[in-house]
Amino acid sequence: MSDASPAPQALRPATVAVTSGRPPHEPDNPLNEPITMASTYVAGGDVEYGRYGNPTWTAFEEALGQLEGGRALTFASGLAAVATIFDLVGQGQKVVAPRHAYNGSILQLADLESRGRVTAQLVDVANTDEVVAACEGASLVWLESPTNPALEVADIPPIVEAAHAAGAFVVVDNTFATPLLQQPLALDADIVVHSATKFIAGHSDVVLGAVVTKDDELYDVLKKRRDMIGAVPGPFETWLALRGLRTLHVRMERAQANAQELVRRLGEHTAVGEVRYPGFGAVISVVLDQGALAADLLTHKTKLWVHATSLGGVESTFERRRRWKGEPATIPEGLVRMSVGIEDIDDLWDDLAVALDTLTAQPPA
Ligand SMILES: Cc1ncc(COP(=O)(O)O)c(C=O)c1O
Image 1 (cartoon, rainbow, N blue to C red):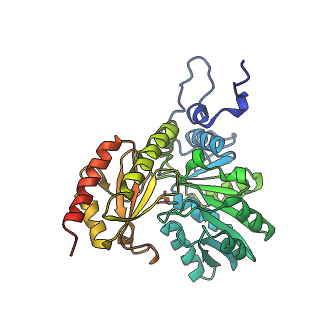
Image 2 (image 1 turned 135 degrees about the vertical axis):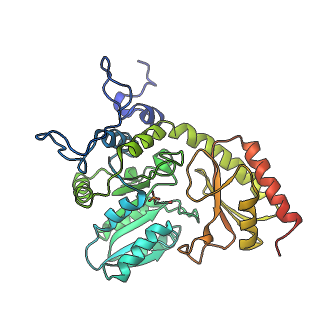
Image 3 (image 1 turned 90 degrees about the horizontal axis):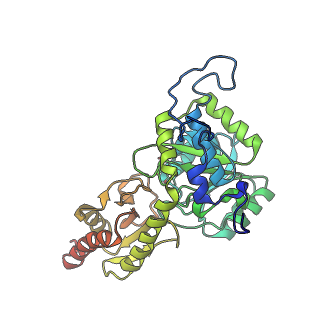
């Protein structure tokens, strides 16, 4: 073995994505974990019942856990995972969260606050001083980085340090970055949460969530809550997500390269007022000078770019975020969130440029 060869326990992420969560290499074993359709198991083992475990979940959890550097649990959706974590916060305790976190997470927090379950302090995650100051008296510091759809980035290490000093635990929603671009557990965050619906599954055909932690006690508490509440995924969905995870690195590489080139070209177009991009990943937000009407026109004038919510699929999709009632008023009306896929960059640009040129030629009234 040459010096450059990694030790078996230190395989690089691309190799982990391909090799983890597979049956042992033994004669006649399948290469892939099969889909186990089972509501119950013969008594006397570790699992017993379909709400407590499933071999297809285990395979996906092994793969995602290895990529994030912890132990994973899969959930019925990203928001089921989010709700399970919020449930860990004690009665009346304080949660710090990004003002521009995914609106479904913020909605859950607002609902908990309206019922007196928790108090919430919303912050600008890109303003580290503001987040650090807010940690005082907090029980949970919720980060999403980059945020959806404002694409703000949190400086995780100093926030984790302040949160832990205040006795709070730290959760990072890593949906946009994926474990390939950011590993919050290595920065001492306590829990990572994913909407695996997005880049991890990667083909716009699955709704799935996951949590990952390297803290065994937290893992046990989260598993107990999943067992109790039953927010569990179907085996087929989990199998599809694992199949998607196998190509996460090549999909992300191509989608990110496309995004970086699009950022350059969009920045030169006169119809585009502002391009927001954190420098990595495959989501861009553009703000059109002419506001909501122009943004709606853009999303209806393309042929390749699909007008659809969600993100992280192989196909490029986009939408005006303020079309949703729950989106914060601080998100500009003319902001279009673009999920860049893996198509040919010139086809993606040609399609967009035709639509953007129309806006410039005939500005909406
Ligand atoms: C950053 C982020 N977190 C969580 C969620 C919720 O995930 P799901 O739709 O799988 O419930 C989403 C969905 O858009 C998201 O973008």
